[in-house]
Image (cartoon, rainbow, N blue to C red; front, side):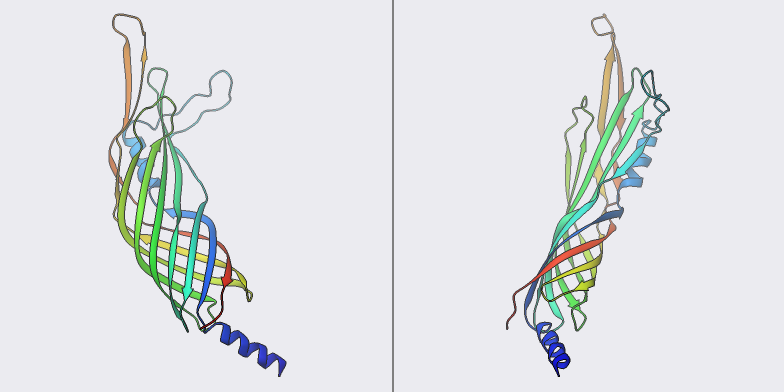
Length: 239
């Protein structure tokens, strides 16, 4: 009878209006990385840098690194299996470095960040341990050249797209949960560039030499997906 009562209480808790607040840490997949690397090569920024006197080995370009992503979500359950969700966060963050071996060398180091906000319809399982969210998304693509000697302005593009995510609870308690989450987005490509790096040799001479490199304008992929682990709280009970 006690077990039956606990089960009945659990089912009751999963039928009332409740708010879940959660944070997801993970990694972004696909996105603009390969497009940006290809354009670095096409723009002449794919040279190998010698290690020089004080370091060993050579550094091939372009080279890239990914930075973990962070997603915040509010899920509001109506009675039963349906609800709405608001998802906002950094869904892709990469750094792509290029080098042009002219003069004393030109560097371009692009940091690309994609932010997403979406308002979704949510449909879950009866016990609310797994749920799908789908809806329109507003995305911001921000690209900046971090090479200290370059002065090209940062670039920001706004794009409309579509968001879908699925969350599966791995640990489910009455007031908190841990989950695995997959989040995907579809959006048009974003125009990026140009970014310029240049320097002069022979400054002070009648005709100094100017060395200029340019990451030419290109379109990069914004669509992609994220996988990560979620930690969340369950707030409120009631009709």
